[in-house]
Amino acid sequence: MKILKFGGTSVGSAQRMREVAELIHAPHLDRRIVVLSAMSGTTNSLVEIARLLYSGDAAAAEARITFLQQRYHEVARELLGGQADALLPTLDQNFQTLHDLTAAPLSADGERVVLAQGELLSTRLVHAYVTEVLGRPAVLLPALDFMRIDTDEEPDAPAIRERLATTLAPYATAPLFITQGYICRNAQGSIDNLKRGGSDYSASLIGAAVGAEEIQIWTDIDGLHNNDPRIVKGTYPIRELSFDEAAELAYFGAKILHPSSVLPARQHGIPVRLLNTMQPDAPGTLISAKTGAEAIKAVAAKDGITAINVKSSRMLLAHGFLRSLFEIFERYRTSIDMITTSEVAVSLTIDDAGRLPQILAELRRFCTVEVDENQSIICLVGNLLQDAHGSANRAFTALRNIPVRMISYGGSPNNISILVSTDDKVRALQALNEGLFRR
Image 1 (cartoon, rainbow, N blue to C red):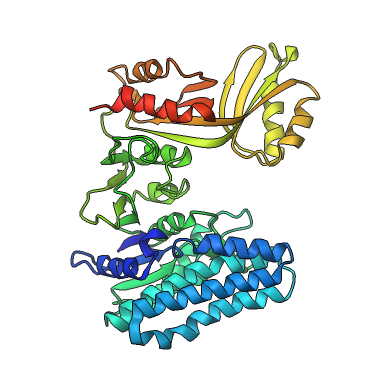
Image 2 (cartoon, rainbow, N blue to C red):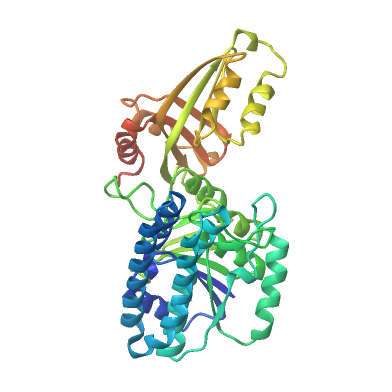
């Protein structure tokens, strides 16, 4: 069994859906589960509809729903031709769900129902094209029948495995299944989701649940690049990464992969292959337990970082100071990305400043606190245990003209993290590309 996940741009139009249908019927594939995101732009539209409903503007929300409904009718007719009329009532059921939610103030549960409609629509379209136009067998698996999160909003792996086995049992000889990414049910049985970008996570969780041979993540770029191709010229795809290296890159800004998606695959030793829908013959990037000899393979950047510098004369030799410090962040459910310490100061970074005022109020009871906003973490990832050729030194030399706020080196064998002002991020990425990867 293989798992093939296709992102929003891969199913972003009728033509893209036709191309995906051909890819999922490649002759070398055995049994497979295809996981689909919503059509590109749909989730943003649904977020806007929810925002309008929260603000009480039901008329504007109705107009957005109707506009989106018309768009899907057009796509269905282009994709299915004369067979579209049979599917349109089914698609309209999803839009009726949205229209019904405009009749009363939107709740949190209602918002999650709104956001779930994109994946339900895209899978219905692709399934109809495969079965009705191409005449090929395929089973539409409702993800809401088996995807579960627990009371901590984390995937409930045992429940997913058990429910998915039950869902698949009647189709022992079926070659192709199509299901939704992103959406799930929570511990109360209500519709929920795995958060933005969660379709990658869905694919990895499904792969782990069925013991897949391989998980394929199909996007619009030919693998994970060594630097950000949007702002750096001359980047190239990395052919092999370890699970740990891929997880670091995903967490620190590589947009092609959801940060959580590597974990289930790594736990079960399932290789993950990143492939390009627009260039299906390109080798892409293979993520597995193996790592190459390169000390630094790639660079990624994460924006929206806030740096907090804590100073206290009481810290000197004070037992339990760091524990007290970390307990504040834990209390406000705010994760720390980087940390450096000295005898009288601690510098750390967070990427979620939503509870920053409360955190600062508690810190200032026993510390002097300085805050720097608009920072970026630049992450250098590779097999740093093999750095026998001075790659780290070349990286720091490349940044000699860039003001560096913090450095974290040695906590992980796969990561050097460097904090710079976001204003300097592009220059820093370009300098690192020149210093590390110029061929």
